[in-house]
Length: 113
Length: 114
Image (cartoon, rainbow over all chains, first blue to last red; front, top):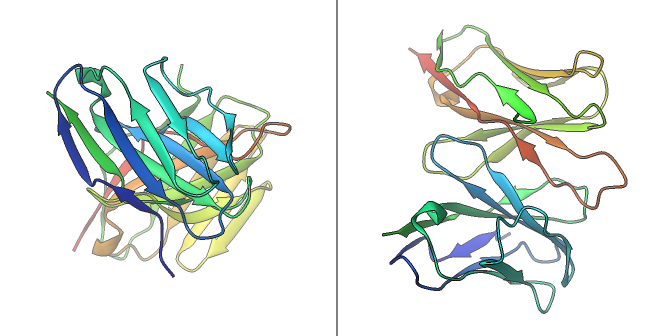
């Protein structure tokens, strides 16, 4: 079956602009996670959704970052007033339940000029 | 201080040899650990999960967990060039934390030479 998909695969934007990154989880998976991976480092947790609600958003670095999952399926990560330090690969993962294996999407490479 | 530590490598091993990777963690309450493989430019792929002290084997891979010493290791037997990748160690928080918010180490780059 289809895996986790993310769009766009690459996003180049200018400092100060607003961006949206989309994640389409595996069908039926109730848990959805966003991570951020900088070059040469491991993924860093941002936010976890169980269904439609954000069960844990402790990893969001500041209030410029926001994520939604209005219907419990697709999720959008929104970044306002982008900064060069936001440049990274944004990974989405989904799992059948909160403690099950996480399957990662291919990621969105964000570059802020 | 990073909560999950790994040697960044590269760990260079000849083809057919055993690759030994280590990971230490600081949260003594963590109970679940995972090894992911990540090829350059690709997303992480789960290789092994381990929850109990001792060894767990799956094909050419063996994961070892020692909660008293707070380390996790991964052995890759009969290493192949296709095993060349970055291996990420991750831990999940103990209950009653919601979900499996993974804390990753920085990864160990493995290079298998023919």
